[in-house]
Each structure stands twice: as structure tokens, then as C-alpha cells.
Image (tube, rainbow, N blue to C red; front, side, top):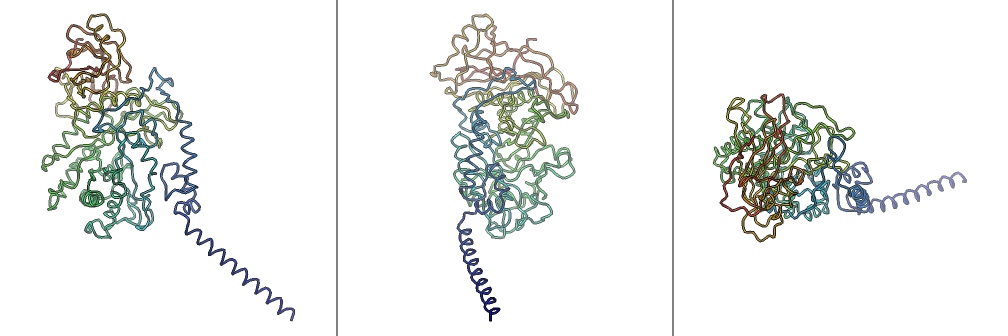
Length: 593
């Protein structure tokens, strides 16, 4: 009898325990279901949540955990973000000081940079007017079509901060998630499954994704770039940057579906043909990827009516400012043969340095890397030539380094210190932003030193003339110039009262040869200043009706180029003249020595 009682007691305890466990389990399950998705993710996968917080992305709605992480990281970042220190190659500031903030006049937002959201205060100080943001489809819908993290992939407060800083965001869509891949073995490079189905078919998962992205960000991000560097193929020198496993025909369908779906999600959306590198095809002896894609679309009866399913064409071009004008002409020829006059965007450009003094950042010279000082020259020259080539938008890649395993892409290091190129970017944005007209008027050498039909031009002295509205910020007051009455008048009249009706003219000059030059330009105004690539005011000398300007030698050579050619010119200078008559001619500089 006692044994039966013990068994009954044990059984009753088990039943009560099971009931309590079930009750607590049910309560826990209910509480779990009520938690926001981001809180559940933070508890089940804290590593992902911490990484997302570091990157400024979130996997779900705000909650105390992610909000606290965000607050701590932002507070720490602000404490580290108070001093703007430049470090040149010798470890000092090199006499380079960041420019003070100014009111940009670039209403068309031509000059931009990628990755500005990681350095918002300094991005505003730089003068950047637009920025590209990568949206990885594989991160937004990593496991299924039902998952949707787009609304919180980029935190709303970051978007608000960028917009408050005067920076327009442009989205880049790329990277196929595993569940959406036609060939999972291709990873994020894969062509999406269902891509050739009608755009309204739910099984066309790419169309569904793009449509929803366009709708989700409508009014905040209205321009979308479709993939990046899809022309890079396996086996080439840049194969590690390959992003697209499909061919040009597959990309033609990708851009068509994206164009139609984005317009459904946002009637005001603009869709860009993803940036190609030009050199990947040229070095492989193939027609340009753009040309092959247009050929694939030629048989599409809807293509011509929709402008071949893109509103602009993006390019990524590096290292040589001369390439920017020449390659723009090549792409315009390709578009023109299809009856298109589509704008060009330069979404990435830079020249990567090798002599950074900071620990772990020095690189080997590989024939294409440059010094920090040459990189600063590149920035000014590339932005000036890009404007003269008619690019609708131009971006330096990038505002900050982030990953330093490969090249050093940033104007800003990850520790917040500035490279000299940051101040050069400020100078270009300050004096070239808001260009209403940009004219290229170089001085050519008397004879050619290399084959005429190659990739290398024959410019001896470079000149880009930019005209801006009469309301553009006035040039700084120059220091005392070497004593002529004209120079004294310039110094006395440098302060602008804002009443002039004539535009401001900025002449950007640099030397293509390895010897110092003195050149002259017509003197169009008594109110003028000469600034170097770091925005420092230089003495400006006049000789009668002409300015005399000294240009330093070019030094950036590559063993891949003809002897005597310098792929980046010497130190650029900017002649800023106020109230220049509209009919003042633009003429090539005259060498004086």
C-alpha cells in the first residue's frame, strides 16, 4: 500500500510539473511571439546583431537591445570624431589644413562620394552632394521570400542624417540570396530564379524584390543602380571583384525586369545600367558589356520605347584622369549607334596610394599605386575632367576605408584621420561645385611622343574652365603678390560684395610634363585668387593683361605606359576669377618657359 502511495505521489508530481512546464512554456512562447523580430534575432544570434549594429544596419524594428547598442556605438564614434587631423606620407600634416565649412551651390548634385554614411560629419564637411549605398539582396531576404529586412537594413535615422547633411542617397542593388538563385553554386553572383517570367509573376522573385524596394524607399531613395561591375569575368586580373555569373543576355533581362518593376513601385524612380569597368572587356578583346547588352535587347519590341530599360549608364574608372574623357566618348558612341543619348554617371573613381604612414596601411608599389600627394592631385584632376566630359554625376570611391585588406579606397582612414586627398576633394567641391559650364582647353605638344591611335593623349598643359553663377562663394583674399599694380588691384578687390551679375570662372591647370612650367592666361577680372589643390591661397602675378602661373612637374609614371607619359599630372592649381564677362573666350594656356 505504501508503495502504491509513493507511486501515486510521484505520478502526481510529474503531472503537476508537466502542467507547470507547459504553462511556463506557453507563457514564454507567447512572450517570444510578442517580441519584435530584431529582439528575437538578438537573443538567438547575438553575433549577427552586433555585426549589424556595427555596420549601421538592423534586422528588424527598433527595440531596447539594438537601440542601446546603436546609442553606445554612435556615442563612441562621436567622441572619436571631434578632431580633423591630416596625416601626409611623412606622418605630419604637411601644412595641409581642412577647409572650413561653406554653403554648397551644387544644385544638380554632380560631385559625390561613396560610403558617406560611415562618416556623416566629415562627409558634410567634404562638400559631397550625393552618395551611393549598397543594398545587398542576400542580406535583406537571406532565407526566404517571406523574410523582409529592407525597411531596417539602413536605419531611418542614418537616412535622415544624410538628408539633413544635404546628401542625396542613391541605392545599388546586387547579390542574389541562396534561396533565389537559379544556380546556387554561383552564390551571390547567380542569375535570379524566375528571371525570365513576366514581371508581374510572383515567381519572378527579382521583380518582386525590386518593386518592393522602390516602394519602400520612395521619396528617400529614388535612383537605383542595378548591380556593379558585372563585366568582370573569371580568370581576369580582377576576377576577385567578379559579381555576376550570368552573361550579357541575362543582364539584359535583369535590367529590363528591374526597370519595369521599379517604375511600378515608384513612378518617379530612375534606374541605372550597372557600372562597368571598360578595361575588363578591352583587355579580353571583347565588345563592351554595354554593347553586348544592347544587342541582346535589340529584338525586344519594348526596348526602344523604354530607352532600353535604363535612365543612365554608370562607369567605374580608376587611376588615370585622361581615361575619363576618352572612355566617356567611347560609351556615347555605343549608345548613339542605338539611337540613345543617355546620361553617363561616374560612380567610382580614385587612385590608390601605397605610402600611407599609418601602421599596417603601407603597400608595395605595383606600377599603378600612387603617393598620397599624387592621389590628391588625381582627385582634383578627375573631378575637373569629369565635369568637362559631361558626366551627370561623379563620385570618388570612397569617403572612408572600411575594409583595408585590399586597397586603401578612402579619403578618410578608419581611425577618422584624413588623407591629403580629403582636403583636395574639399577644394574641388568648393570651387567646382555648381558648374553651369565646363570646357576642356588644353595645350597640345608640338609633336607626338607615342602612337597617335593609342590610349594616351598628347596634352602638354591641361586646362579645364568652369563657369558658375554670380552667386557662387567668392574667392579668398590672396596674399600680397609680387609687385605689379595689377596684382595690387587684385588683392584690393578680392572681397566680393555679391552684386556682380557676371559669372565666376574657375580655371583648373596642371602640367603634363616632368619639368616645371610657367604659363599665362588672359586676365578676365581684377578680383581673383590662385589656390593650390589643398585650398591654400598662393601669390598671383600679373603681367599686363595676362596672369602668370607656375605649374609643378608631373611625377606619376607607370611601366605600363609609354615613356614620357604621366598618368597623373603635376600639382593642379585653381585660378578663381570673379565677375567674368559671359563672352570672355576660353583659350588654351600659353607656355612662357
